[in-house]
Image 1 (cartoon, rainbow, N blue to C red):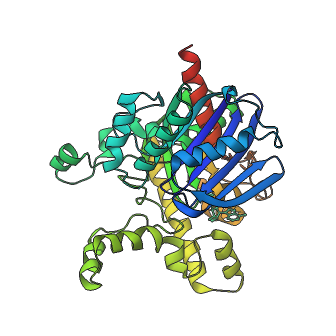
Image 2: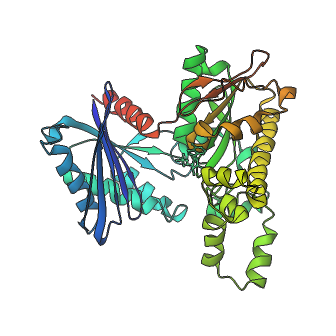
Length: 398
Ligand code: AMP
């Protein structure tokens, strides 16, 4: 089945056409939507195409993406009917969506309602869904939520120690994000190990520019590091991660910061970038470490520390551990960071083979022979996961 996967942002739209038996056929991104100089890109195998053009809104972005997918010179598809379904990445599904769903008017209204919880993301997701409905009104659309996999969290793990009224009034609680990725890699781990997911205690480390860790018992998330928003938990590329919330009040008072200014600092100016003063990208941090840069070393040490601390606490939550997964940009490629995270974890049964660890972006078992925990690198593929979920739901209605 050919499925168009859409990840729509406020001024961008990522698209990928996936054949669920053959794999990705084409992908691209449209950036700066709403401007005269929007940037359109398309990748088909080794061919890359880029053009700057005016793209006023998401409807136009979808139309243009489809025009290129139909362009005979690329040989991707010959007619729109070949696209049998559209799968959308939707950031927030609140407490309503525990799994992916076919989109109808009620679902769309609910996604729109959750714009209150994800004001930057959900309105963009809604715009993407509406744009596709306009251009391809008869093609079924599916919403795959970043939060859905974490809906199995028990109240003791998702509630904050705040007055309970705020949960009732505003639904303030931990939601967790990167759910599609955590679900995908945990299923892949079970397949790779040829063991039922239901028998495994897994800690999944999604370490990208955004980063989160999930504790998964028998295929259900029992704790996760991101919270009400993706800001909570690990220190990330530009996000602070968790710290004493009183610091926010202190800084706002003494630096005379407005709420949007504080929000910007926490989300865009903190984390690896804020501590190192160099970059949010671990590759730059590693280069600076080679020159002896002390702040780069500190940023890396802090990063490793919080990941190790989270793994330890999740092993406690799980009462043991069978599988540790590394995924996403840094998890898949960060050879030294993986080695440092896994050092002196033998008390948990974690030990890695440094030769096996010397690899990037490929599925690998990097455990040492003495380890009782399997440590795996599993490349994530959120688009493939969205396509698979979409196919499953659309097949079920046939
Ligand atoms: P993602 O958000 O999953 O695309 O991950 C992006 C991040 O992965 C980058 O900001 C880097 O910190 C990290 N990364 C990607 N490639 C490498 C690499 N070869 N070595 C170290 N870190 C990497």
